[in-house]
Structures are given as C-alpha cells and as structure tokens.
Length: 257
Ligand SMILES: C[S@@+](CC[C@H](N)C(=O)[O-])C[C@H]1O[C@@H](n2cnc3c(N)ncnc32)[C@H](O)[C@@H]1O
Image 1 (tube, rainbow, N blue to C red):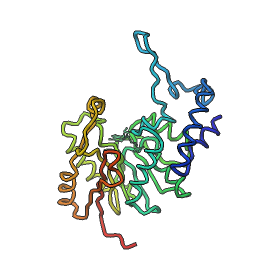
Image 2: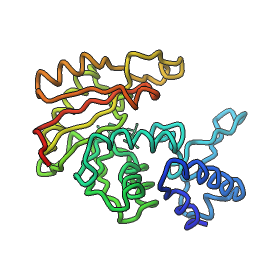
Image 3: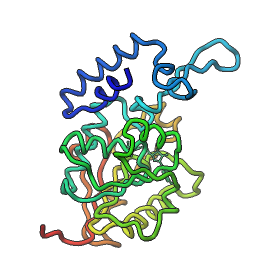
Image 4: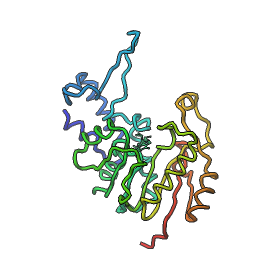
C-alpha cells in the first residue's frame, strides 16, 4: 500500500499526474484506515479532528499527500508552477529553496529531468520536513530552521522562494521590508541569482484570500527596488499569470554558459 502510494506520488508529466491523482484518491477512498496502514505509530498523518462542540468533523490537510498544505489547489497546478520557476534556471544548476515545504520542488525536478538536483530546502515547519523525508527518505536534503538562521557558508547557484512571501508566517511589522531583507539574504547565498514568486496586485483577491491574510505585491515596485540595488533584474507575469502571480528574477552575473 505504502509503495503503491509512493509510486503514485512519483509522476513524470503533468498529463500523467491527473490520472495518478485520481488513482491515488481512489486508493485512499478504498482504504479508510490509510493512516493506520501507513504508520500506526503516527497520529497526525490523516487526521479527522472533532472540534470542541462535537457538531462537526473536520479533516485536516494531510501533511504527506495534500498539495493545499504547501499552497496549491492540486498537483497539476503545483507542478506547472514549478516548471515556470525552473524555466529561469538551467536544469543542472544547484538550488537552495527558502521556505521549501516538503521539498516537492526537488522531487518534481527528479521526476521531470531524471536526475537529482543539487538541492537544499530550508523549512521552518518540522511537520513538513518529516513528511518530505517520509516520502523521499535520504533522497532529499531538508533543514528545519528559520531561513534567517541559514549557515553563512551555504551557497548554491540559485536561491528560490516559491510562494513563501504570500502569507505572513511571522509577526513582522513591515512585510514588504521583511521580504526585501529576505531577498538580500537569498542574494548573499546565491552565485547566479534568485527567483521569487509573488501574488500580484493586478488581480482581485477573494474574501477567503483576504481573511487568510494573503499579501499582494506590486511588480513595478518590486522591480524598481531590485533593479536599483542589483541592476540585472526582470519581472514576468507570463506563465504565472493564470495563477495571479508574478516572478522576480535577479541575476548576479551574466551567465555565458
Ligand atoms: C506556500 S509554502 C510553499 C512551500 C514550497 N515552496 C512549495 O512550493 O512547495 C511556504 C513555506 O515557507 C515556509 N516559511 C515561511 N517563512 C519561513 C522562514 N522564515 N524560514 C523557513 N521557512 C519559512 C512556510 O513554513 C511554508 O511551508
């Protein structure tokens, strides 16, 4: 059962992914005791929580299989979005991901290009790190820490940040300043540059988004700040447009090969 689920989570194209997601859902539905079969010692894999008044059962997102828990409505959107990010980065370049979740980006890369990325994911949420390690074992390097505490010596070609600025995970007073400070930190840990996705203010937020404290950014403002500071910069709504996002790319040097 666990092996079958792992296979279903290892997909190589977005087209196949849809089919596998359906199969995975079928498998889960057929096995109501999925959490017991996967690991009877764990309590938080597939949790149906009864709230205090006992009137309603709420199913919390599963840390291993949910895409929502890392910010995507489904696997197809998640993987398409990763391909948009990867488009800016040569496929054999090394990456540090700030706010890595389960490290799904790295596994998508392996499935898509057939070889392991030189990758480290920094993630503050131990539950997501545990889920990533449970799915991928030693095939993935994830560090549980606030990215502010990243080791000075840790440097890779690129630093990426996919969606982690779209919500406040900390009680910072000035989220835009916090975002800029983090991009500066990312630049200090990158040889080639950084790629960051943002929710664009060119789109209307739903009430739910507003209630959840989703942040929107102005692409012009971000680009002005970045190009003043780093010169070689770009923003791109293309590709990310359908998801209400734009991408900031800052190049540290001109790459001739
Ligand atoms: C929207 S999720 C995206 C996860 C991943 N980038 C992906 O696309 O699958 C953003 C993640 O950033 C993490 N995060 C936010 N602030 C962080 C910080 N200061 N240090 C480490 N991780 C952080 C959150 O815990 C969350 O898991």
